[in-house]
Image 1 (cartoon, rainbow, N blue to C red):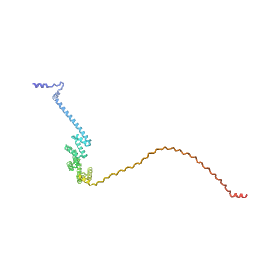
Image 2: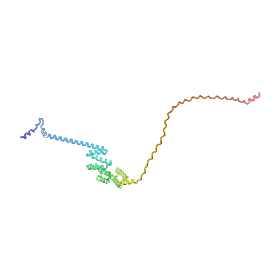
Image 3: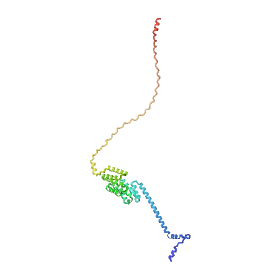
Length: 303
Protein backbone atom coordinates (compact mmCIF):
# COMPACT_ATOMS: atom_id res chain seq x y z
CA UNK A 1 0.00 0.00 0.00
CA UNK A 2 2.82 2.38 0.85
CA UNK A 3 4.53 1.74 -2.52
CA UNK A 4 1.34 2.49 -4.39
CA UNK A 5 1.02 5.75 -2.51
CA UNK A 6 4.60 6.70 -3.42
CA UNK A 7 4.02 5.92 -7.13
CA UNK A 8 0.88 8.00 -7.04
CA UNK A 9 2.77 10.90 -5.52
CA UNK A 10 5.39 10.75 -8.35
CA UNK A 11 2.81 11.14 -11.09
CA UNK A 12 3.27 14.51 -12.74
CA UNK A 13 0.20 16.21 -14.08
CA UNK A 14 0.02 16.54 -17.86
CA UNK A 15 -0.33 20.06 -19.24
CA UNK A 16 -3.82 20.83 -20.36
CA UNK A 17 -2.86 22.16 -23.82
CA UNK A 18 -0.52 19.24 -24.73
CA UNK A 19 -1.73 17.26 -27.78
CA UNK A 20 -2.33 13.59 -27.23
CA UNK A 21 0.25 12.68 -29.92
CA UNK A 22 3.04 14.17 -27.79
CA UNK A 23 2.09 12.39 -24.61
CA UNK A 24 4.62 9.53 -25.15
CA UNK A 25 7.39 12.07 -25.83
CA UNK A 26 6.37 14.06 -22.80
CA UNK A 27 6.52 10.99 -20.62
CA UNK A 28 9.94 10.08 -22.01
CA UNK A 29 11.25 13.61 -21.42
CA UNK A 30 10.04 13.61 -17.89
CA UNK A 31 11.73 10.25 -17.27
CA UNK A 32 15.01 10.73 -19.17
CA UNK A 33 15.30 14.43 -19.96
CA UNK A 34 17.85 15.17 -17.25
CA UNK A 35 20.13 12.35 -18.33
CA UNK A 36 19.80 13.44 -21.94
CA UNK A 37 20.84 17.01 -21.14
CA UNK A 38 23.83 15.87 -19.16
CA UNK A 39 24.93 13.54 -21.96
CA UNK A 40 24.48 16.24 -24.61
CA UNK A 41 26.48 18.72 -22.54
CA UNK A 42 29.31 16.20 -22.17
CA UNK A 43 29.33 15.52 -25.89
CA UNK A 44 29.47 19.25 -26.67
CA UNK A 45 32.31 19.78 -24.21
CA UNK A 46 34.28 16.91 -25.73
CA UNK A 47 33.74 18.22 -29.25
CA UNK A 48 34.84 21.72 -28.25
CA UNK A 49 37.89 20.31 -26.51
CA UNK A 50 38.86 18.23 -29.55
CA UNK A 51 38.36 21.17 -31.87
CA UNK A 52 40.40 23.43 -29.58
CA UNK A 53 43.19 20.86 -29.31
CA UNK A 54 43.34 20.51 -33.09
CA UNK A 55 43.51 24.27 -33.49
CA UNK A 56 46.25 24.46 -30.88
CA UNK A 57 48.21 21.67 -32.55
CA UNK A 58 47.78 23.26 -35.97
CA UNK A 59 49.11 26.52 -34.56
CA UNK A 60 52.14 24.78 -33.09
CA UNK A 61 52.79 22.98 -36.37
CA UNK A 62 52.63 26.31 -38.20
CA UNK A 63 55.07 27.82 -35.71
CA UNK A 64 57.37 24.81 -36.04
CA UNK A 65 57.35 25.11 -39.82
CA UNK A 66 58.12 28.81 -39.51
CA UNK A 67 61.06 28.01 -37.22
CA UNK A 68 62.20 25.39 -39.71
CA UNK A 69 62.34 27.99 -42.46
CA UNK A 70 63.77 30.88 -40.46
CA UNK A 71 66.33 29.19 -38.19
CA UNK A 72 69.86 29.69 -39.52
CA UNK A 73 72.44 29.25 -36.77
CA UNK A 74 73.11 26.16 -34.70
CA UNK A 75 71.75 27.92 -31.61
CA UNK A 76 68.45 28.75 -33.35
CA UNK A 77 68.03 25.16 -34.50
CA UNK A 78 68.82 23.77 -31.05
CA UNK A 79 66.17 26.02 -29.51
CA UNK A 80 63.63 25.01 -32.17
CA UNK A 81 64.31 21.30 -31.60
CA UNK A 82 63.83 21.79 -27.86
CA UNK A 83 60.41 23.40 -28.48
CA UNK A 84 59.04 21.28 -31.30
CA UNK A 85 61.15 18.11 -31.29
CA UNK A 86 58.19 15.87 -30.47
CA UNK A 87 56.12 17.08 -33.44
CA UNK A 88 56.22 16.05 -37.08
CA UNK A 89 58.08 19.21 -38.04
CA UNK A 90 60.53 18.45 -35.24
CA UNK A 91 61.96 15.57 -37.28
CA UNK A 92 62.88 17.89 -40.10
CA UNK A 93 64.36 20.28 -37.53
CA UNK A 94 66.55 17.48 -36.17
CA UNK A 95 67.90 16.74 -39.64
CA UNK A 96 68.63 20.42 -40.23
CA UNK A 97 70.39 20.59 -36.88
CA UNK A 98 72.52 17.56 -37.76
CA UNK A 99 73.44 19.18 -41.10
CA UNK A 100 74.35 22.41 -39.29
CA UNK A 101 76.61 20.46 -36.93
CA UNK A 102 78.29 18.80 -39.91
CA UNK A 103 78.83 22.09 -41.75
CA UNK A 104 80.35 23.58 -38.59
CA UNK A 105 82.84 20.71 -38.33
CA UNK A 106 81.11 19.21 -35.26
CA UNK A 107 81.09 15.71 -36.70
CA UNK A 108 80.56 13.93 -33.38
CA UNK A 109 77.45 16.00 -32.63
CA UNK A 110 76.19 15.44 -36.19
CA UNK A 111 76.67 11.67 -35.84
CA UNK A 112 74.79 11.58 -32.52
CA UNK A 113 71.91 13.65 -33.95
CA UNK A 114 71.54 11.41 -37.02
CA UNK A 115 71.64 8.28 -34.87
CA UNK A 116 69.10 9.73 -32.42
CA UNK A 117 66.77 10.50 -35.32
CA UNK A 118 66.96 6.93 -36.61
CA UNK A 119 66.45 5.45 -33.14
CA UNK A 120 63.34 7.57 -32.40
CA UNK A 121 61.10 6.32 -35.16
CA UNK A 122 62.60 8.30 -38.00
CA UNK A 123 62.84 5.09 -40.05
CA UNK A 124 59.09 5.30 -40.75
CA UNK A 125 59.54 8.31 -43.01
CA UNK A 126 61.43 6.94 -46.00
CA UNK A 127 62.82 10.17 -47.45
CA UNK A 128 63.98 11.55 -44.12
CA UNK A 129 65.41 8.19 -43.09
CA UNK A 130 67.59 8.07 -46.21
CA UNK A 131 68.97 11.50 -45.37
CA UNK A 132 69.83 10.32 -41.86
CA UNK A 133 71.52 7.14 -43.11
CA UNK A 134 73.72 8.94 -45.62
CA UNK A 135 74.38 11.68 -43.07
CA UNK A 136 75.52 9.00 -40.62
CA UNK A 137 78.08 7.76 -43.15
CA UNK A 138 79.24 11.32 -43.92
CA UNK A 139 79.74 12.07 -40.23
CA UNK A 140 81.89 8.95 -39.87
CA UNK A 141 83.91 10.13 -42.87
CA UNK A 142 84.41 13.52 -41.21
CA UNK A 143 85.62 11.77 -38.04
CA UNK A 144 88.17 9.86 -40.20
CA UNK A 145 86.60 6.54 -39.22
CA UNK A 146 87.01 5.43 -42.80
CA UNK A 147 86.35 1.70 -42.36
CA UNK A 148 83.00 2.35 -40.68
CA UNK A 149 82.11 5.04 -43.19
CA UNK A 150 82.91 2.80 -46.16
CA UNK A 151 80.79 0.00 -44.68
CA UNK A 152 77.88 2.43 -44.14
CA UNK A 153 78.05 3.74 -47.74
CA UNK A 154 78.14 0.22 -49.16
CA UNK A 155 75.30 -0.97 -46.93
CA UNK A 156 73.13 1.91 -48.07
CA UNK A 157 73.80 1.12 -51.74
CA UNK A 158 72.90 -2.51 -51.15
CA UNK A 159 69.73 -1.92 -49.11
CA UNK A 160 68.34 1.14 -50.93
CA UNK A 161 69.44 0.98 -54.58
CA UNK A 162 66.46 3.08 -55.73
CA UNK A 163 66.94 5.88 -53.21
CA UNK A 164 67.24 9.45 -54.44
CA UNK A 165 70.54 9.64 -52.49
CA UNK A 166 72.17 6.65 -54.19
CA UNK A 167 74.64 8.89 -56.09
CA UNK A 168 75.75 10.58 -52.88
CA UNK A 169 76.45 7.18 -51.34
CA UNK A 170 78.43 6.06 -54.41
CA UNK A 171 80.49 9.24 -54.48
CA UNK A 172 81.07 8.83 -50.75
CA UNK A 173 82.50 5.37 -51.31
CA UNK A 174 84.91 6.74 -53.94
CA UNK A 175 86.01 9.55 -51.60
CA UNK A 176 86.68 7.19 -48.71
CA UNK A 177 88.70 4.85 -50.95
CA UNK A 178 90.81 7.82 -52.00
CA UNK A 179 91.27 8.92 -48.38
CA UNK A 180 92.44 5.42 -47.53
CA UNK A 181 95.15 5.74 -50.17
CA UNK A 182 93.38 3.51 -52.71
CA UNK A 183 93.23 6.00 -55.56
CA UNK A 184 93.40 3.30 -58.27
CA UNK A 185 90.49 1.44 -56.73
CA UNK A 186 88.53 4.69 -56.43
CA UNK A 187 89.14 5.56 -60.09
CA UNK A 188 88.15 2.05 -61.18
CA UNK A 189 84.93 2.32 -59.15
CA UNK A 190 84.11 5.65 -60.81
CA UNK A 191 84.86 4.31 -64.30
CA UNK A 192 82.43 1.44 -63.73
CA UNK A 193 79.86 3.90 -62.44
CA UNK A 194 80.35 6.14 -65.48
CA UNK A 195 79.64 3.19 -67.77
CA UNK A 196 76.30 2.67 -65.99
CA UNK A 197 75.14 6.29 -66.30
CA UNK A 198 76.08 6.85 -69.94
CA UNK A 199 73.82 9.49 -71.43
CA UNK A 200 73.04 11.19 -68.11
CA UNK A 201 74.89 14.46 -68.48
CA UNK A 202 74.54 15.59 -64.87
CA UNK A 203 75.92 12.34 -63.46
CA UNK A 204 78.75 12.25 -66.00
CA UNK A 205 79.84 15.78 -65.09
CA UNK A 206 79.72 14.99 -61.37
CA UNK A 207 81.83 11.87 -61.89
CA UNK A 208 84.35 13.78 -64.00
CA UNK A 209 84.68 16.47 -61.33
CA UNK A 210 85.21 13.88 -58.61
CA UNK A 211 87.83 12.08 -60.72
CA UNK A 212 89.69 15.37 -61.13
CA UNK A 213 89.63 15.95 -57.37
CA UNK A 214 90.91 12.44 -56.69
CA UNK A 215 93.70 12.85 -59.26
CA UNK A 216 94.93 16.03 -57.53
CA UNK A 217 94.57 14.69 -53.99
CA UNK A 218 97.75 14.16 -52.00
CA UNK A 219 97.48 12.45 -48.61
CA UNK A 220 98.76 14.31 -45.58
CA UNK A 221 101.83 12.81 -43.94
CA UNK A 222 101.36 12.46 -40.22
CA UNK A 223 104.47 13.28 -38.21
CA UNK A 224 105.16 12.81 -34.55
CA UNK A 225 106.51 15.52 -32.29
CA UNK A 226 109.93 13.83 -32.25
CA UNK A 227 110.11 13.90 -36.05
CA UNK A 228 109.15 17.55 -36.12
CA UNK A 229 111.76 18.37 -33.46
CA UNK A 230 114.42 16.48 -35.43
CA UNK A 231 113.58 18.43 -38.60
CA UNK A 232 113.83 21.69 -36.71
CA UNK A 233 117.25 20.74 -35.27
CA UNK A 234 118.57 19.98 -38.78
CA UNK A 235 117.46 23.30 -40.15
CA UNK A 236 120.44 25.75 -40.23
CA UNK A 237 119.99 28.71 -38.03
CA UNK A 238 119.40 31.90 -39.91
CA UNK A 239 121.72 34.69 -38.68
CA UNK A 240 119.88 37.44 -37.04
CA UNK A 241 119.98 40.57 -39.10
CA UNK A 242 120.13 43.64 -36.98
CA UNK A 243 118.46 46.65 -38.38
CA UNK A 244 120.84 49.43 -39.42
CA UNK A 245 121.00 52.43 -37.16
CA UNK A 246 118.87 55.17 -38.38
CA UNK A 247 120.88 58.20 -39.60
CA UNK A 248 120.06 61.35 -37.79
CA UNK A 249 118.55 63.87 -40.11
CA UNK A 250 120.73 66.90 -40.95
CA UNK A 251 119.68 70.08 -39.24
CA UNK A 252 117.55 72.19 -41.38
CA UNK A 253 119.03 75.63 -42.27
CA UNK A 254 117.50 78.45 -40.38
CA UNK A 255 114.95 80.19 -42.41
CA UNK A 256 115.72 83.97 -42.48
CA UNK A 257 113.05 86.18 -41.18
CA UNK A 258 111.24 87.92 -43.95
CA UNK A 259 112.49 91.50 -44.52
CA UNK A 260 110.10 94.22 -43.80
CA UNK A 261 108.77 95.72 -46.98
CA UNK A 262 110.17 99.20 -47.74
CA UNK A 263 107.72 101.68 -49.01
CA UNK A 264 108.50 102.41 -52.63
CA UNK A 265 109.34 106.06 -53.33
CA UNK A 266 107.34 107.63 -56.11
CA UNK A 267 109.41 108.06 -59.22
CA UNK A 268 108.97 111.47 -60.87
CA UNK A 269 108.01 111.38 -64.46
CA UNK A 270 110.94 112.33 -66.78
CA UNK A 271 110.84 115.92 -68.07
CA UNK A 272 110.04 116.36 -71.71
CA UNK A 273 113.16 117.18 -73.74
CA UNK A 274 112.95 120.27 -76.00
CA UNK A 275 112.60 119.51 -79.62
CA UNK A 276 115.98 119.45 -81.36
CA UNK A 277 116.67 122.65 -83.36
CA UNK A 278 118.15 121.84 -86.74
CA UNK A 279 121.63 123.45 -87.26
CA UNK A 280 121.83 126.42 -89.67
CA UNK A 281 122.46 125.39 -93.20
CA UNK A 282 125.95 126.20 -94.51
CA UNK A 283 126.09 128.76 -97.36
CA UNK A 284 127.26 127.06 -100.46
CA UNK A 285 129.85 129.04 -102.56
CA UNK A 286 128.42 130.30 -105.79
CA UNK A 287 129.11 128.17 -108.69
CA UNK A 288 131.19 129.75 -111.60
CA UNK A 289 129.36 130.67 -114.70
CA UNK A 290 129.74 128.20 -117.46
CA UNK A 291 132.42 128.94 -120.14
CA UNK A 292 131.15 130.45 -123.42
CA UNK A 293 130.96 128.34 -126.39
CA UNK A 294 133.98 128.51 -128.85
CA UNK A 295 132.00 130.26 -131.57
CA UNK A 296 131.27 133.23 -129.38
CA UNK A 297 134.98 133.59 -128.50
CA UNK A 298 135.89 133.94 -132.14
CA UNK A 299 133.40 136.65 -132.76
CA UNK A 300 134.75 138.67 -129.87
CA UNK A 301 138.39 138.51 -131.24
CA UNK A 302 137.37 139.88 -134.62
CA UNK A 303 135.92 142.96 -133.13
